[in-house]
Image (cartoon, rainbow, N blue to C red; front, top):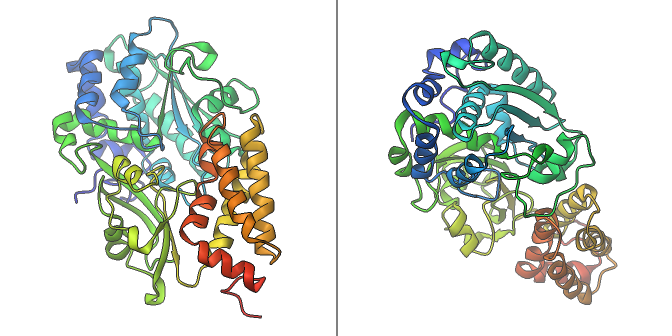
Length: 421
């Protein structure tokens, strides 16, 4: 497949505006401002079928249409760059290697929706990315792509970088907005949705880094062209970060809908030392795992939902036959307990319960009844206030359901069956 999202990352000084311009950068913005109305841009994005790459998969064009229809001013355009889930590192590549693709995507989106100001809410643990983004924004101002009357038009847009403080919950768009306003990062009740009542309770568009990097491609080559890439239900290229027990970990750009087996065994080179594949978390740390017999599935939103899991961020975490599922699930639920904001009881108490039960099993003190309790607690967590609690139990519950025998062996031996002694 032709590199689209990663077309610039291997070039020397790819983060600079000079390299971006040589590769045709900002031509899509020029086309949007000079040849298209805001409504035309929205319609082109709707035609493309682009769906959000942050995890929810909401149609981008529809979100922009809702925001554009709201007449309250000022409007704000926010990039969610708070990439905080374990083993998810796709947005970092764009931020550090091709920041102007993100900026151009934001400019086009702001023009389409009537937004005057923009913020990139950046993960606090990306200090290098912050320096690169701030320099790229300064370059864009110097060249007239940001500020007043951009490219001689009536469109004006100012952009700022805001660093998070290391809270995973702020990847949830309303918690992000609360944090942006200087408040504790906790999710808001919805509705109203941010497109109508977001930052400072004004219309606010929130899009993921990877989502926005797709936008210049759509305007440059057309929504129809874009819609023919990959899966018909959610087309376009997709970045897949692959980690764990594979020979070639990294970020792979492939058409949406590429089979999971192909990604692991062809692109990522298969399992280290040619061991057997045991399990895969196909959509990041909060997705339900798949067994080795379940990986013949297209990597897109509807296919993975049908398989009982989710695409999420698209981060693929691979376990081989030497890995302990109990230990892996414990580490993940420990992360989610640490990152729970504590606002709602199902998430606050549920993550703590699961950690305590899983630690008991890991320490050789578990019982078979613990497994049923895990599933019961997980069911209760489905009633959490936001997506963190609704998904936090997935790695644990799915591990119990699909590797119950391994859990029982762990309980019987009083230790991990993959550890000697």
